[in-house]
Length: 283
Ligand code: C2E
Ligand code: MG
Ligand code: MG
Ligand code: MG
Image (cartoon, rainbow, N blue to C red):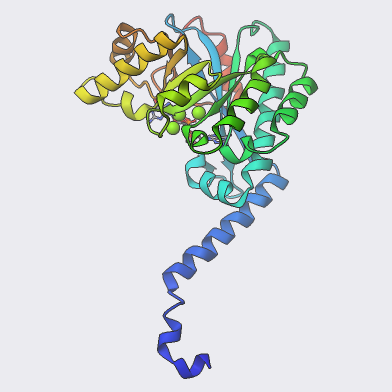
């Protein structure tokens, strides 16, 4: 029958689409293998206070591919989310980051260091997410107040009540929440008020041109004063120059993250950064 429909029937098999589908399937298989074979790593990027002292680190996922390439999450995180693989990957991220924090603590001087971990919406929506997080913290004997979970505004699109309840459960034991990429999503101020947030993270798309673009200037200034008004800590991400930091400071921002201080780095390099009195390091 297909044959009798002739050439038209074949139109469904757009070769480009087929290529896309099969390359996605290939990537999915590679990601499964990556989990099994421990090809994922965490890089850490410092978060600094107004004096440039490191007060936290954001754990950022990297994939060390068999061909030697180190891949940032941009190229695989969406597929990981679509396929649900983000759940086991995210669990690995949380456990590894906590294990690392425990080590830094044992090595010394890091009592005050908080660790920020990105949590995807699918991961957060697991009914037993809170239980899982708490059991990881217990495993590594960590103070929950040292863990910050970064969520994005997409979380607010559905079931706000459940989101709030789940956040409260973790917040009660001291875990802090940060709203990542703030300003790029859809959150209404009404929702913002309901969430037990500790921190707003100004998206780097607003920071990039903050010295030259007047709209970005007003957006950034508004976010900072709103956060201060709501009693939330505010951190700017994507700070690449001293001038940007200076502008943000003048507006009342006290926490920063970005290439100006350090790129995300491997564990050993991060341990060395911890020994610096302040960032950016001189010399
Ligand atoms: P994000 O959470 O907003 O992380 C910040 C991203 O900005 C990182 O990209 C970081 O390398 C980059 N960045 C930091 N400072 C600067 C700067 O000064 N200039 C510029 N141009 N970029 C800067 P990365 O590591 O490629 O991660 C991209 C995104 O992937 C993250 O955005 C986050 O949404 C997601 N992601 C990373 N790790 C994880 C993870 O473990 N779990 C989940 N669910 N998502 C993750
Ligand atoms: Mg983040
Ligand atoms: Mg961000
Ligand atoms: Mg981002």
